[in-house]
Amino acid sequence: MIIAAVVGLCVVLAVLAFLAPRLSRHPQRGAQRSLGAGSRAGGKAPGVLGKLFSKPFRSSSRAVGRSGAAGRSTRGRMPF
Image (cartoon, rainbow, N blue to C red):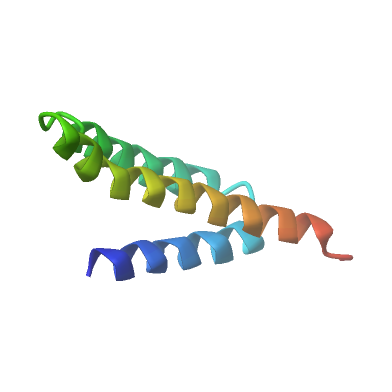
């Protein structure tokens, strides 16, 4: 379920970044901030478990950032 939510968020951000590049920054930062909080909370687990619990949040945050950047760069390459 979490994976579907992250994929949906990435799609929404990519479309928003394509349609309104400046307006997409704030939702992207909010999503990355919340995923960063999850990563920090997961990292507080002891030992190897901390790395295992924080990794999904870090990779999801990176995916959100990449999808927003991809939408903005695609908009910049459009001829109109």
